[in-house]
Image 1 (cartoon, helix red, strand yellow):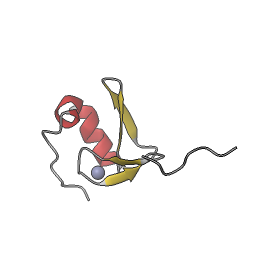
Image 2 (tube, rainbow, N blue to C red):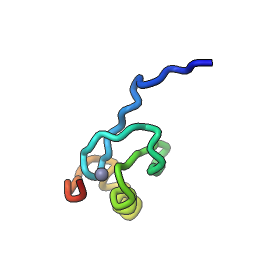
Image 3 (cartoon, rainbow, N blue to C red):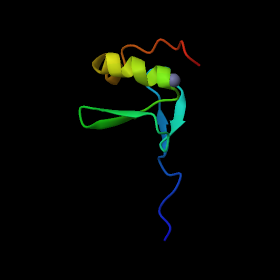
Length: 64
Ligand SMILES: [Zn+2]
């Protein structure tokens, strides 16, 4: 059985602004929404301060 693949599968890492694939294992949920990250560092940063990143105000573009 085939499911739709690669359709809206690219997510944005809200911490560094990079595109990440949705099957990345690095993800967190905040406010009912799922966020994906390029690295553990980005996820850790998000987890520390999800609200800031979720509204797009931060993004320090440091990691990648
Ligand atoms: Zn990142």
